[in-house]
Length: 63
Image 1 (cartoon, rainbow, N blue to C red):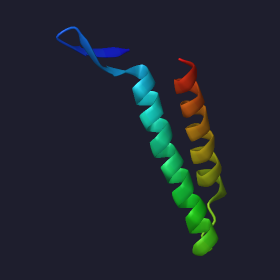
Image 2: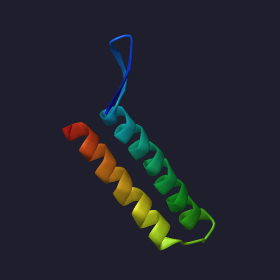
Image 3: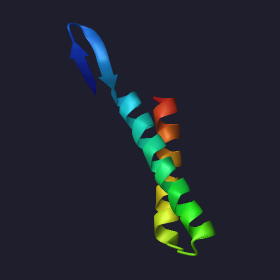
Image 4: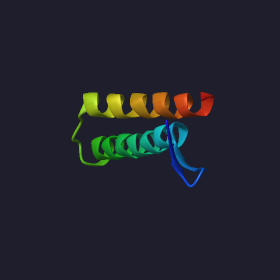
């Protein structure tokens, strides 16, 4: 997937996957710090955010 502007590639699927992976990683870190400091453990949110972040960043690097 590419978005072009006058034959110049502006956005690629790799950049979208990388940005989504970084945002998901930030969410995972948020849930992890919330579990550590506020004793509000939401294990499915922590695990899913970190797993999706790892998957998307590795997938973006391989493409």
